[in-house]
Image 1: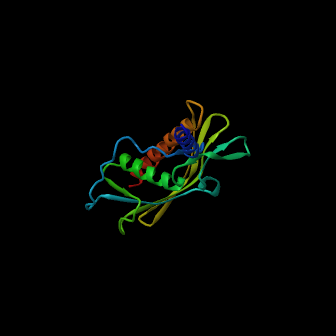
Image 2: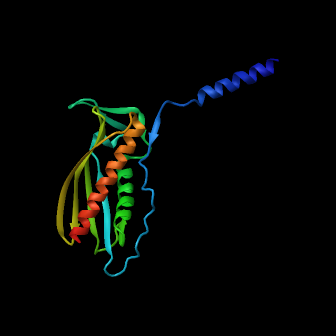
Image 3: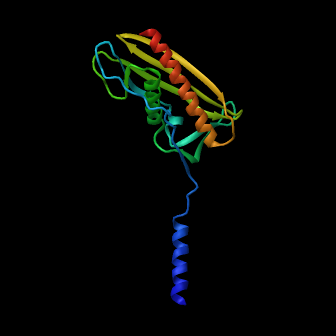
Length: 188
């Protein structure tokens, strides 16, 4: 009988020690349709997404929520599964690849004839009024010519909570990728 009690006590302690720490981790979803990359041939457009930079308040692990016009909260239990700048860069490459058929879009240098895109994200957070904010600017080096464009998107969350906020942020980021893609096709 004592052996059973000891076994139950050990199992109970093991269950307590491996209990959930109350933290939830988020990853931006990739586009649902995988992009077919063109093989680099003469005339193929090459685009290197060199960097997506975020400010310090977004660079930490916590998902950011704006609670008033001047106050932000960085979550301690709702965290990014990997660094936000990496997630933004990876999803931007994926979304641009889907939106620019015939282009080679990569997160690695592609050669001397590539266009280079750098993005500075200044806002990527939820807000007290139920909207998400995605803002910043991008800079394209196209054949030695620098082209700079600001962006600011506000999308309404369809539901409450961090899950809905992250999904809406991803949707806004995908919309910005579509906007960048359409501007790139006009430039080229």
